[in-house]
Length: 494
Ligand SMILES: NC(=O)C1=CN([C@@H]2O[C@H](COP(=O)(O)OP(=O)(O)OC[C@H]3O[C@@H](n4cnc5c(N)ncnc54)[C@H](OP(=O)(O)O)[C@@H]3O)[C@@H](O)[C@H]2O)C=CC1
Ligand SMILES: O=C1O[C@H](COP(=O)(O)O)[C@@H](O)[C@H](O)[C@H]1O
Image 1 (cartoon, rainbow, N blue to C red):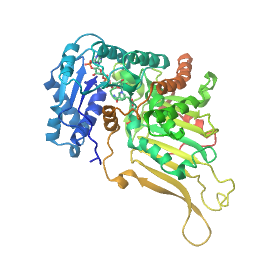
Image 2: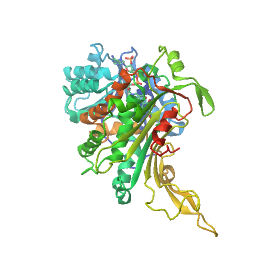
Image 3: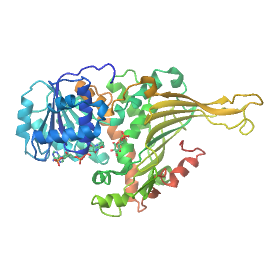
Image 4: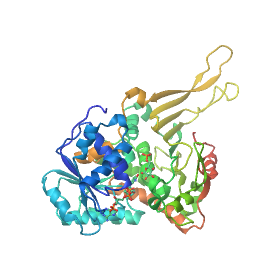
């Protein structure tokens, strides 16, 4: 159980894209978990919308199967599942046309005055047209919120076009651009780590920190999402949003308050301070890769192109499934401190981790060799799995006869410390939308600044005849990714 549940006001949650992968794997389980924990009651409703023709009974069957597949048995009861399913109804609606809107609007009209959330879990190309129709039908009022899934657009121009189309009919204060990484407990903990613990904040600068690494590694391939992934790739799928958000939280100045705009203003400054990559520097500062057949956890797995072909994709895709980069934040605080970023599919382990490596002492009393190994201090922030933190430091190896050092660590496992289930990121975010709290959502200028920074990479790849570098599934990306950091005399933490 999650501690201290603050109930939210009754709502109607309308999910467009309700038959899709995201709804089934994440949104319905998150809503169920919040219902089971008593955060909302039977006076709220979930209205599932997609084009497929089916009735509510059939949708509830699908939803039940999804809950059974994605919520562990010890976290659900037949009674609470049945009570949750009773809140669901289905409306066949075409977000790009006129079919089905009358029935949806009639359902909404049954609860005038209720908070309405319109969650757009569809392709981003539909966001503008769904919002225009919602507005034209009078479904948007001061109590409505619209949630936009990531990645918002395909590049800077399309992101701007979507923001403009949605912004023309929905006020910015009612738009929630979701990045589920911001809903992860360990990501929010970055704020607590930095700003509730002065010992760290005083060290959080270029005088003390040598470099920062952000790794978001996955063992899975493209799963059943090849159609989406092949048009996206690692840069759009993971870096433009999740990894840049992590970088912002690590690098930003202390906000004046936890007010949504105060936090988002500081993140925006980081995005704007990120050094733009010039076309001639792309190859030296970044590496893109694509996996070929290999083995992950001793299981043989096919290459990306084979997985793509199995889902009807055509050969010769140059979509990157791995990306690494040396980024630089041009500010007083971070001058000269590289931020090494990497993410990929079919890597050896699923791990999301931040490594803050501190500088070595200006003079060593313990030269390496004579006194055992010499390792720099590092703060490891494990976002998932085994969430926690570890401060790596040198200690004296116990025993007589000389003074030898040994690397040891101060470890905090969040699971052991708090002894409770960590809610899925979507649980927190879905309820924040109902509350109208935008702190953990991205503002228009933030999203566009992030696209603005990645755009030169996208342009350079589009102009280049060079394909991504191959790497065997189960390796840490192409060898060029190792060279990227080792050229600087540093090494990836593994
Ligand atoms: N899946 C994931 O893990 C993640 C997904 N996302 C984002 O979430 C969004 C949805 O992704 P995902 O669930 O994977 O996609 P899917 O392709 O699995 O689902 C798309 C959904 O949109 C519906 N849809 C398509 N066209 C229309 C239309 N004209 N009107 C109404 N509904 C329509 C489809 O149903 P039907 O065909 O019946 O209309 C289906 O329910 C995307 O923007 C994606 O980038 C973000 C993070 C993770
Ligand atoms: O947004 C996405 O994130 C997932 C990884 O999320 P995590 O919470 O499991 O770390 C990724 O698999 C997917 O491709 C991407 O769209």
